[in-house]
Length: 260
Image (tube, rainbow, N blue to C red; front, side, top):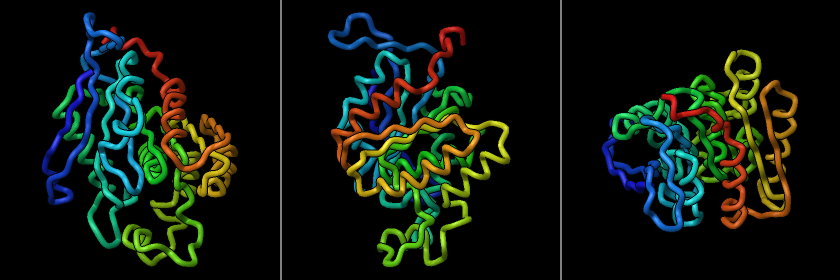
């Protein structure tokens, strides 16, 4: 595998930012790692970080590079700070950066496939929200999306919203807007001919468990191919390190990329 720390300028944000990228590399002499590169333009997992993290966190807290080595799968991990993957009410346009500028730049910099069947998005906590938001908003771009302990219910009335919530979503209700995952799920279910597979998991001791249950109820009644898993666990990296392996096993990677 090739590991790249990429610093670049974002026209949308008006500042320099970063992404961490894992690229497949075919090797025969590397000890202890079965590297595979199946295609000239690689299938890609866009892997999103949580509220207190950055684009390096998945590498620092899990063995994601080792997990994807034999899959021929590129991983792109962007930096979005505490934006909640929104065009912030009081801040920068991180949603536009993520959903429009980032894929264009990453595919210009690196040999990444733009085919829908080759693109997947996943994230934890705030990133779980971002992953489902991206896939449900743009179902024509993703074959599958996964949320690990996601902060999925942003539309529920918050009696004492945090500073981060106000900066991201503003003072107006989230329900029924483009930031409401329940609204996006309904739109995708009823109006899209292309529907991404969804995978959702959450620990039963996680403080976001109730919100995950509410989204589970809605998603299980939709026509989307939906998988839900739960079990003992809190909001911590031991749980996410284990579950990202389940996500990788679940991804629809059966396509023979060697024929491209």
